[in-house]
Length: 184
Image (cartoon, rainbow, N blue to C red; front, side, top):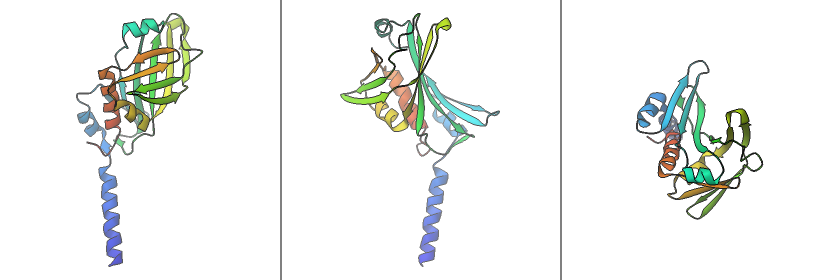
């Protein structure tokens, strides 16, 4: 009897593991009305989920002494089946400015409906000839989910302040949901 129970439990757990996957085809259907895009590179054998947001407001850009700023969020996974949620997601800000504004100070703090979330420092690079700065944050997926769950989210990047729009927060929430193999 004990052996039968162990076999039943093992079968149940293995069936749950099979269900906790998403094929690229299923993900593509799920993302049909989202700004999150799915691509597969046969050469490297990797898939990528990525969303690119619209620019932050012109007034916030002007206050930050930049021409424009937007961001992308995403991650890679092997093959064409998402088997597990990523631990880290890449959040990259693309900043257009005549003079680098974030070279000296590029840490990030999120202010979400009264909650403060310290993201910390980033990997920074600038291409002055192209008037571009890139700020790359590896952010914990759970932290991204907390951010996306709020309706009013501001953040401080260096000494500048920005506000995530409703569409930008929706895109973050869509990525969080899509990156969970057990959600459908």
